[in-house]
Structures are given as C-alpha cells and as structure tokens.
Image (cartoon, rainbow, N blue to C red):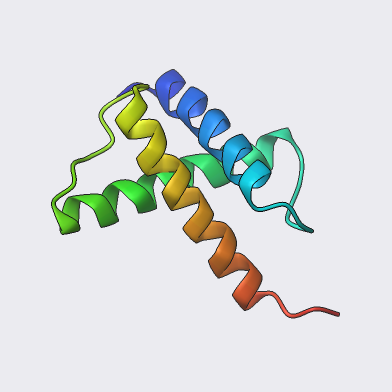
Length: 84
C-alpha cells in the first residue's frame, strides 16, 4: 500500500473511530490521521494473527479492520490516560 493510501485509510478510520467513541481524546486533523494509521497497523496485525485477513488497500474490509484497530487504540489511550 502506498503512502497516500495509508493517509486516506487513516483519515477515514480515525474519523469514524472518533465518531463511534466520542470523548476527550487528542484532537485535530493530523492526530486523527495518525490514530487511524496506527489503528490500521494494529488492526491488520491482530486480524492477521486471528486469520481474518490483512489491510490491503482502501477497500471495505481494510477500512473495517482499520476502524476496529483505531477503536482499540482509543480505548488503550483512555485506559492509560488518568483523569486530572
């Protein structure tokens, strides 16, 4: 997958994950893309281990995997971050 594909996939996955899990998370356009890209990597890794497939491009299956990975990333962030 090319660099532009990762950015597009990250933007889509990060935005949808933040819509599904609203709250006080790191914000902004760039952070949303980063959360989505890291979520795609996490989701691809987990789905490959479990035998569900990999992230292969900007397609429906890859977007779902990336969204699930971004949700996992947001949940981990919320568990690690202590309310001040």
